[in-house]
Image (cartoon, rainbow, N blue to C red; front, side, top):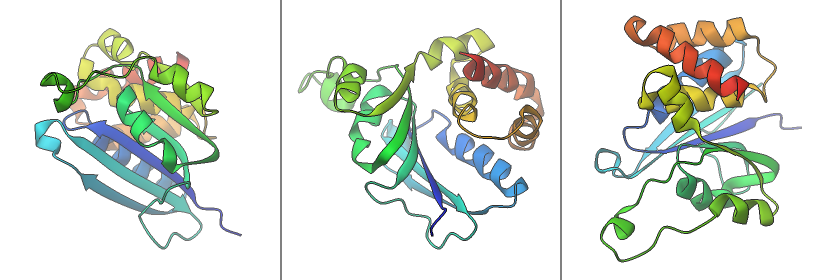
Length: 191
C-alpha cells in the first residue's frame, strides 16, 4: 500500500512559494518522513507560474506529482488554483488565497479574468478552502507573508503541534522576519 502524500504549492513568481515548500519540507524531515521536493519554474521573474511539489511518506521514489495525485493544492492566487484542479485526487483539497493577480492576457486586454472561480470549483465538486490570505498577511505586517498565512491554514489539516510548526518556521525564516512570519502563520491557522 502506498502511503505517500502529495502537496502542490502554486504561486506567481515572487510570492514566496519556495519558502513555503522549504518550511513544509523541514517540518516533515523532523517527523522522520522520506521527502522529495521538486520546483518547476515558469517565467517566475516575470510574474509567471511557480509550482513546487512536496511528496512525503515512508519511501518516496519520485518528486513529481501527476494528474489526480495531489492530496493538497496550496494556491497563492485563485486562477492558479483553477488551472491545476486536474492534479487534485478524489477527496483532495485546494487551499487558496482569493486574491486575483491578472495574467498577461488580462493585462493586455486580450482576455478577461474569469468570474466566481471559487464558486465554480465548489459547484464542480472540488473541496476548496478559499479565503482572503492577503488581508491576513497585511494584518501580520507585510503583504508578502501570504505564504505563511497559507501554511497556517494548511496546518489545520495535519497532526503536527504548534511547537513543531514554529520550530520549522524558525529554521526557515531570517531572524529579522521571524515574528512577522509567526504572526502570519497563526492568523492563517485561526482564520
